[in-house]
Length: 456
Image 1 (cartoon, rainbow, N blue to C red):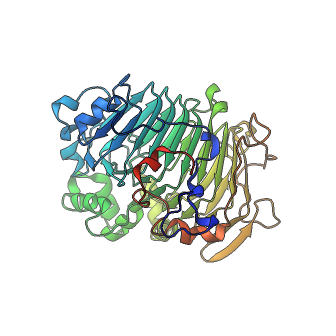
Image 2 (image 1 turned 45 degrees about the vertical axis):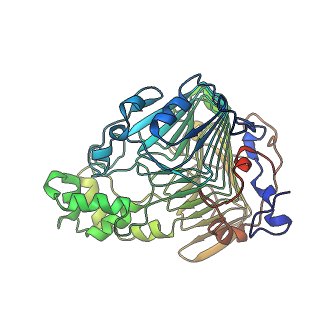
Image 3 (image 1 turned 90 degrees about the horizontal axis):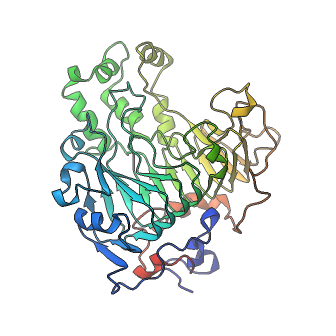
C-alpha cells in the first residue's frame, strides 16, 4: 500500500483516494506506459491538445505537462479546428476581450484519462464531454471563465460558459481538480449522464483581493461607468453600493452542479452522481441541483461565510431599487436541492452559513410533480454561529427541507446504493479538506502512474 507523506495510519492511507461512488468500475484509459506513444500523449501546447482530443484519435492517456492558455484568440491556427471551437464572445472582462474563449468537444471516447502530474491550469476554455464512457479527469485546475454580465442584466443567461459539461455519458470520474469562479456552472451533468463521481475537488469563488479576476473586472467597469448602465446604477446614489461592496457581492460563485438541464426530460431518470470529499468555498447554489435520478453527497464541506457576509451588505432598500430596474445582483444561499422526483442524500457533511441547506422544490411548492426527495444524515450545520449536528428528520432540525411538503426518502429506480463506502466523521472535514494535502489540484505529490490507477 502506498502511504503519502503526512498520511500515516489506516485513516490517512492512500486507500481514501480509491474510486468510489456511482462511477465505481470506471477504468479510464487504463495503465499505459509513457513509451507507448500510440496510446499515451504528452500535451505541451494547444496544438498538442487538439491532436490528442480529436475524435477517434486513439489516445487513452493524455498528460497535461504545463499550464495552457486556451482562449480562441490564444490558439495557433493549427488548433482552431475540431475539437476546439469558438465559444460565445466575451463582452466585458478586460482579459477575456483579448484572449477570447474556446470550447472543446470530447466526443465518442471509450476509455480516456486526462491528468496532470503537477496540477496544471487550463484557462479561458470549457469542455463538453459527450457520448463517452469510462472517462477520468484528475489533478487539473480550471480558471478565468467569468465576466460581469451587463447583457442579461446580471441574470447570467448570455454566455454558456461552464468548465465541464457532461452529456449522454456513462462513467466519469473527476478527482483532485480545482474549479474557480465561472460565468455559468462549474460541472454540469445532463442528458441522462450516469455513473459520475466528483471527489477530492475544490470549487471556489474569487477571493476579491487586489489583482484577483473579479477585481480586475470591477476596476475596468469603474474606469468607464457610462459604458455599463447596470454597474453605474449600482454605484449611483439610487442604490449606494461602493466599489468594495460590489467586489464582495460579485466574488462568490453563483452555480455549482446542475444535474438534469430540462424539466421532466425522460432521460433524467438515468442521472446518477456522487460528490464526496469536495470543498465548496463561497458557492451560492446547486450543491447539487437535481432533476430526477439520484445524487449522493457525503463528506462535503460547504463554507459560504464570506458570501453570507457579503449578502448582508445589501439592505432591503438596495434590493428593492435593484429589482425596480430589472437588474439581478445579490447572493443566493442554497445547498443541496432535489426536484421532480429526484433523490438527494447529504451525509456526514459540514455546511457553514447556507440559509437554505436543503430544498425540495424550485418551481411550485403546491405542485408535487416538481418536488424531490431529500434528506440529511449526521450533518454539521451552522448559520451566524448557531450550530447543529444531526439529521434532517430530527425534531426541530434546521436541515428540514423546504419549501414543499416533504416526500418520504427513497432512491429513484434503485433499492439501495450500488457501491460501498465508509464516510468520515464530519467534524474532521474543515481541517482535512483545507489542509496542504486536502481537496483540489496540485495537492498530492506522488508518482505520476498513480494518477492512472483507480485503487491503491
